[in-house]
Image (cartoon, rainbow, N blue to C red; front, side, top):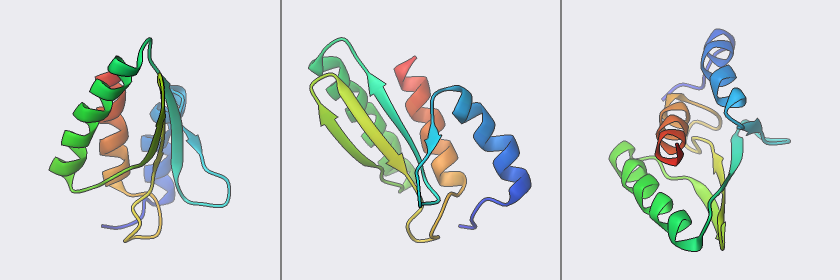
Length: 97
């Protein structure tokens, strides 16, 4: 999987930034914290997201504290952001809608 080029970044990352994703300092990665009303909702979202991660064979760095889930996405094998990160971020946002 190739790292996103400059044009792909403009096209593909801007919609994610509008949905609350941010670049991670000192890494070619994106992050977002999702908020839920309850732990149960957070865990259900993580379960749905985990199924997408398995399907894409792309696994997030994430942490859950009660009703929040913090996520970092980066394709470690490529050393930066790829289409896999865009796809998983989009699936995660859709599951949170």
